[in-house]
Image (cartoon, rainbow, N blue to C red; front, top):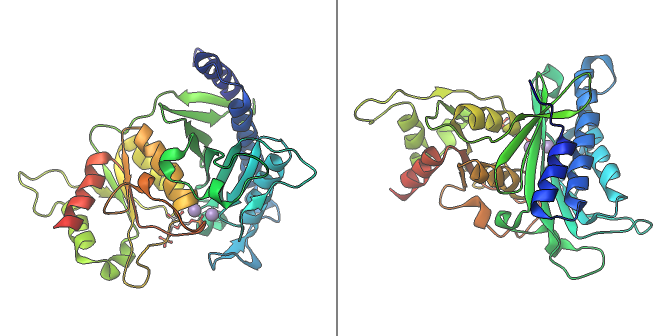
Length: 331
Ligand code: AHG
Ligand code: MN
Ligand code: MN
């Protein structure tokens, strides 16, 4: 690497280009610091008391893992006293997070999934963090729920951190997607993936195929199409890769080309994933990288959430492959 560009340097340069106030850069820098703190715990997971479950059930009806609680706590603590946000919401919190009255507040809003892929924590498989940043909608005071129930196309930035063999932070403000790798000894996020775009030719599809029998016929037919059925002249069928951490599956498909989907089924018509914390931020990144996110019938980013924790069927990644899912749904 001939030039080392830290995330700080990158943000300052962007700020100059845009003539921005600097608040956004400071927010990103705080998020990068949260990522480092969480990464420090993931790296020494088997050596500390951070593996395993708590006895607490979250609002999603899932038992929280110790790392879920740690990551949630870090992100709330590191961002509630800075005076930059007027409201926050986390997948792990029942209600919106108010900024404590002893601290100032600002014009931004933060939504996040502190630890994505919880079922993979104890087996040393990649997990992640997902975040989205909005400008407040209300005029003044501490924010309220209207600042948080927002369409994805109102995001001003979104990103994720993947805690894998290396830790990476990937973000966009809607114009270009930048990826940074945490240098293990410098402790800095270094620009390693300057302008990420979905490759022209996709390679993978990612889905929990164990659920196949409960999908509707269009989703089953879509999956068979990806396996090569009915494609003439025969195209090379895609390979299946499924980690079970959305961030890791999305990241692979972003770099190598592919689609991730978690459709609804008879029991859970809205699937499993959450619109506010997962689908919208990743959908915003997908779009900025030339991809697309759909609920199976139309754009995720156009959906108006009516509940913080609402779930949504998600098809995300390579644009052609996602559009194909919509085509099957219309047949
Ligand atoms: P979370 O750990 O934040 O609750 O998210 C888990 C999600 C997502 O990361 C993953 O793609 C999906 O759940 C896996 O679900 P299945 O185990 O049902 O395949
Ligand atoms: Mn998640
Ligand atoms: Mn989570």
